[in-house]
Amino acid sequence: MAVAIEEKSASSPLSFLTDNAIALAITDTYSSLQERRRLLGLENPGTVDGIAREVQKDVLLTNFMFSGLRCDLQKIFSVNPLFRLQHGFAMGSQALPPWQLMALYGNSNVFMQAAYSSDKSLTAWGNLRWSPRFVTKTQTSIDPRQAQTMVQFDNEYTGEDFSASVKAISPSILEGGLTGIVIGSYLQSLTPRLALGLEGVWQRAALNSRPETAVSYCARYKGTDWIASAQYLAQGSLGASYWRRLTDKVEAGVDCQLQFAPGMGGAGMFGGVRREGTTTVGVKYNFTTSVYRAQVDSAGKFGVVLEKRVAPPVTLTFAAEIDQWKNTHKLGLAVSLEGAPEELQEIAERPENAQVMPPPI
Image 1 (cartoon, rainbow, N blue to C red):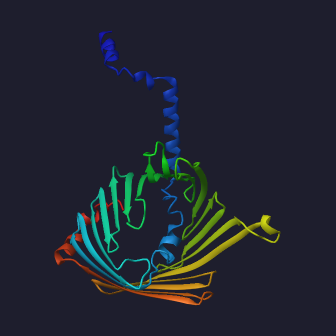
Image 2: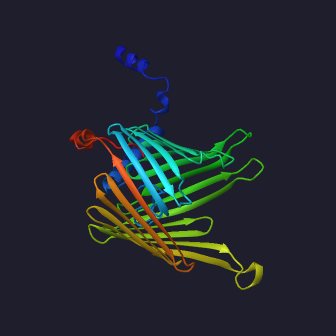
Image 3: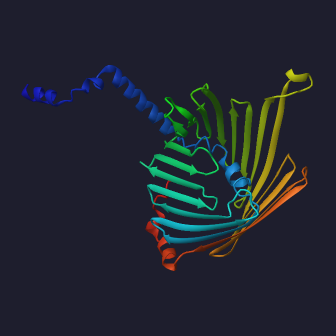
C-alpha cells in the first residue's frame, strides 16, 4: 500500500489530461493511422511550389535563359563548411546588373547568401534547419528604386508522406493591423503514386482595403518513368504538366497554362469568357561534359541553351531565343571560371564528406 501511494504522489499534476479514456482513444487512433500509412509505403511528394519541378525547373528554359554577355568568377575557400565568393559581370542584359558580388556560406544546419549589385541593391538569404524535417527560410531584398523593402519568411516541414509550408511576404503590424501576404500549403501522398494538395493565400495591401483570399488545388501522379501534375487556381487559371524520362540521358516535358478571364467576346461588353493559353514542349540532353536544353511554345518562341564544360574550372553557356511572331531574337554567352585549391578537391572526395547532410538551400 505504501508503494502504491508513493507512485501516485510522484505522478504529474497534469497527468489527468493524458490518463483518460478520450486521450487514450485519440492516441490509439493516431497510432493505428500511422501504422497503416507506413504499410502503404508512402513517400514524400515534395512541395506545392515544386509540384511540376521536373518540367518547369529542370527541363524548360525558364531558369536558364539570358541575353547579352556574362562572366562569373568563383573562388571556393572551404568545402565543409562551404564558403564561396563570386564576382559577376554582365553586358547587354536588361535583367542582370553590370556588376554583382555574391558571398555564400553553408553547413548542415545553416545556409547564408548575400548579393550586392552595382545598382546599390542588396539581397540576402538565410536558412536554418531546426531538425532534419523542419527548416526556416528567410529572404530580404533592399532596392533603392523600390519604396518598400521586401521581406519573406518561409517555414517548411517535410514529413514521411507529406509536406506543409507557411510563408509570409512583407508582413507588418505597424499600421495597427496585419498587412502583407500569407500563404499556407499542404501536399499529402494518398497512394505510392498519387498526391493531392491545396494552397491558401491571404492578402491585404493596407488597413483601408479589404483582405483578399484565394485557394488553389493541385494533384501529382508518379509513374515508373513519367510524372503528371495539375494545378487549379481560384483566379481562373489551370496548369498541367507532363514529364517523361526517354532514356538515361534524355528527358522531355510538356507544360500547358490556361487562363480564363472576362473578355469582350462577341456580345459587347458583357461577352463571354476569354480563354488564353500557352503550351510549351521542352527536351533535355545530358552528355558527359555538357547539357543541352531546347523548347518551343505555341506563342511562336523557340529557344536553346547549351552548357559545356571545356575544362574542370571553365564552363561555357550559350543561349538563344527566336520569336517568330514578333520577329525578334536574343543571344547570350556566359563564361564561368571556378577556382579551388587542389587540397579542397581532395577533401571533397573523402567518404566522410559524402555522407554529410547538404545545407538547407
